[in-house]
Length: 135
Image (cartoon, rainbow, N blue to C red; front, side):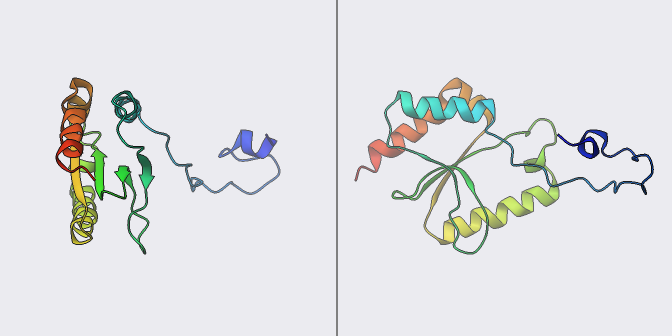
């Protein structure tokens, strides 16, 4: 790692002040609750799931878990008790736009919080979906 990176954003000696603009943050990895849901999918031997599926042809929207051939999408909603993105005005509005676009495209969307995943209620509902919608 270069000295400039190690010292950033402090001013380097003999230079002009370093910009305070933050560099683009790399994409976050999956949350522990998403990892648990993925484990549950594999444990029940459900069809292979696609993670972070980009479902829209022109927008960069992604869905947490998807079965594109069945048009089933799963969103694990985080931060609902801590005023996270999904519970604030702008975040909710963006989610509505995304979810409405999914509905227009014929997707079924199931949304779960961490309690539904950790209790097993989420995976049970997904399992029911597959039992009732066999191909």
